[in-house]
Image (cartoon, rainbow, N blue to C red; front, side):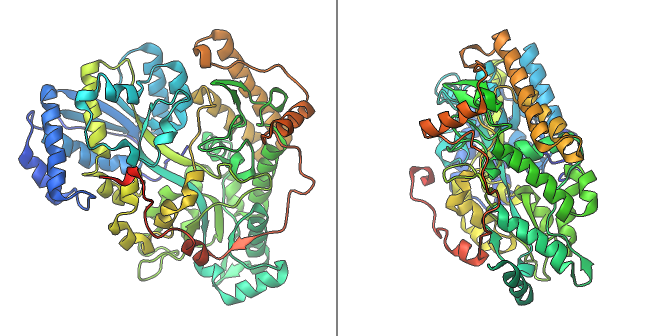
Length: 585
């Protein structure tokens, strides 16, 4: 889950458009189409048709004031400051779009779910809460809503199959509960210009026996980190480091790990968007019920793969990152690579792209092209083909049953407006958080791609599907997520070994799930914990069943390093969009 503490200029804002006219306006639609909603995958004629549908559908709600909330990132700022105003002028529905910190979004949605009081009419909250929403039954199943009560306010041009993250908001029952409004991934980031230098390439190959390039596995990442930190040491008179991360015991440290760090190492089972039966949090789910987090209950949160992931995190932070990194939070560490003294970072969010391509930065060339690139993340020693390989944030529209139906209908119009084909391409250019396949393959992004450091190429690649959010195995995201930073922080600070820290985390997650089971509040799909068995029992069961998690400890956790040439990697990906129904207009 991406927390954008420094990406936005405002930590909190509320935009109330009370001056918007309380009547629909096709002339306003024409003005917005000409002045703001370009480029678009639709022609201006088709944009106007789409806007006319919104005008007609909004008539019963003219003059109504509705309230929505999202976390503070560039994409949502654009919605709150620009799209909300446009929507109000075009439809006559008055709109308040609040921007607050993500932790506050989670806290407020919990309050509405627990109290039944309608605080907001709609929410953009992470699809990481899909397991929570599915089990507590407080969220509206959008697939039912669009065919039932909300059918008259569901746009015929919404084209749900065009959304690349549709599966992220789908529950075990096959119903869609959340629809992505913005998405971004955590990828590998590196100094392409340094990796291309003949002298450094020659020196690296002489020492390690293979080419300096994009690391395919963690062994190569570690070799490159060692090489730049302790062999290269300086470039152009500046001290350089082979790695960047952060380690302060702070809530942001939890995001660093629940955002799929364990899956990158090889924790959990095969399966997309999340492993089955064990996910990347190490939580085993049988049927629709979570049954354990610890290895002794069949989970993998404290298994060898998870411990390896934490061990490498701590080791690399100490050995190869700038000394101050260990005391940094997420928000403090985020801008560091742009300062020009970091060679690579395995865990880097594509939401940083816009801030990494600004003119005048040490990592940007005079012509505006980046000196860096992004590429797929390397795989840990326990990783197997078929596993997820990284995290994708998907801030998603969510409706709650506690919102009155008339308000729900009015706000559903705004939600669709912000995702509509009339505006989504322009929104993608502003925030660089793609949600539609049709936008990704638009010619405007083909033209812009050289200045975005591999972002477009990644989203057009077949590799993209291996980056997914937290899935349905996590029964109560707010309760469980807070356990991570406290326990990982003990490993980061040295207060506990990685094994002891993960043992404590697994036990804490089991304890929360045990309380949920006793309460019965989540019904038939709530936790039903397995009885405790030996680790050997579960290792043998995985081998017998043909599943993966939990895996036994490997005798060698550092196989030979492997790299790939970045330019060859890019050339290997398709150059044209996939032929599928989702691309149909």
